[in-house]
Length: 397
Image (tube, rainbow, N blue to C red; front, side, top):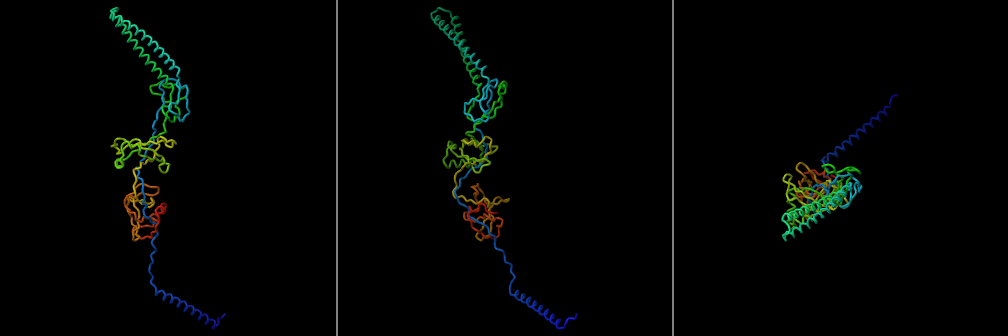
């Protein structure tokens, strides 16, 4: 159907009006843009948490690794031969000194003891007779009523009887000892291990003594450790400064912690220090003693040892999480007055809870980055957010 010329004219006029409107809008946008500069706006500096070092008095410690050892430990052996007649304890019993533990067939040794005592009585009687004869011969010789030969014979008989009496006395002592050895008792307070023999077993019949069991003393207990030569020099200097004498060494406290324990809950005192430094290792052997009434320490444990060396006033500490390390050693990140991050090399000391002592490298008023360390790039500006060091101990990195 043919389009009406009037309708065609109307559509053409509408399209032209739309084109003019779009052109006008585009021109307006261009004119508006020509009046502004298109400059780059930098993002704000990253925020990091900073804190000044904590200043407090701390106790300096000498730290080492040691091992526990029993004060007394012994094998219980059969000192006479015979059959095990009785076992008087249960494996693992805690016993007191003198407690009877084993009985080794005592009857043969009791009989030998009786024999020795009987021989002793006979020897005493023989000696009395010989002594009386000698005294008579001595009196007769003084009056000239006997010969020198009779006197000498009586003297020899008296001396021989006296020797036999002494031998009989020794035999009684030996028989008594063997009889006593049939009863094996605890030589000290301690824990008796599992028995190594059975009822009725023959023991003590070989050149090698038969081990019946062992006994170990747990209360008190020793802790052995080594001190480096440098620490020895420091300790001696500190002792001179505090006026300590060699006798005061046993008053020095020592603290110990097991590998599974936090801190050093076990308290003892220094018991011994070697008189010389081992030249091959450059260390001094030392030993501490602990009462160990709860038997928390067993012989053979590896333990952490620390010995207090005196107090330091106004030590500087930072959260341990604030420390980094590289090939040059340990460092912290500092925000300077211009809010620019600096990397500062430091010498670190011991841990105090979650804080680390800084020996050298920072000042008391330095702002240390304690959280947001990944955003703190040396040489770049940051937005420091002050926070107490104690509150930032577990901050993010």
